[in-house]
Image (cartoon, rainbow, N blue to C red; front, top):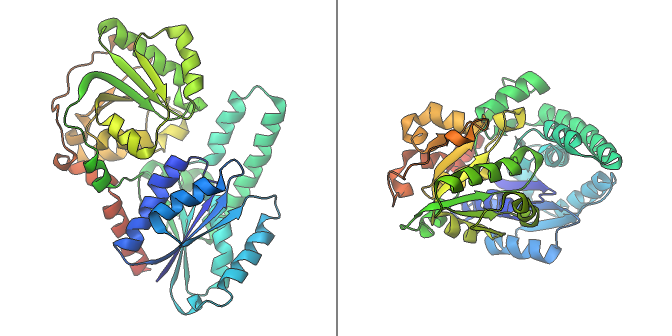
Length: 389
């Protein structure tokens, strides 16, 4: 079996590393699959940095295509035919795993080339609705027009991808239900629920048994659905109750977060960005992870990377809003996971009472629900599904 993985303009290299490269490394090293990673590179991403990161995990099994105009598809077809012109891949089962609707449209070209091809459409969220939120949040006319054009292109890709793929992957059950009801996805088509996942071996190596229970951390961007200002309001309420509290924000947008503090004037707060490994090390020393969301549909179907990372290193999680993965976890594991979650009413933050961690040196090995995020377990699910098709 040959396994082709397609990524279209992944802007967050940390997510690319944790959700693509680690998956492919396990697929190649532990399951012996012959893989090829194809990346359509974002113009802003430095090619040397991208290739260095890829080669750290899978060495030479990849190709990088520069982002271009709508002529991309013509360029893409030429690249495909040139690469596979002298290969013997047509004699084997081909799996094309495409991350996003745009990547799946490109993958459909491969399906047309190879007869024995399975096309997997890996749905990571709802881009059309995310664009709507960005349009609403934007104050610039040109930016709004650009986003509207992007939305039209996404809508076309989504329809083509949903119709021509053989199997769907969704990050939550809510995402599957929403795409069937709202966007006409096939209810009868093969599918898997694969949430944002982690390499448990790497996490175990970075677990710190000594936690600072006065330390609160947020990791992630300052996108409009992330509610950056509400995070500061929460931190301020905590600071009022506990003068020894410390706050950490790890984000590529740390300069924007830093500006927010000119209003809230938190006494003990640090802002920075970090590699994925550094993030795990910092997280494991903290007591609480924070994720503030509203009840938008974007959040109701989501599986935020930060929430999985918080839980994986033994943090309790202060959260608000309806988050898709929380519903899946509670339905599957009940109190085992709900005891680690502190639900926050954002309209009544002063009522927040933060207690001590029940297990100060909690180990992920003691948490049964952590396997739900394990790349080893989830790669097995994908391989089993492919073998049945």
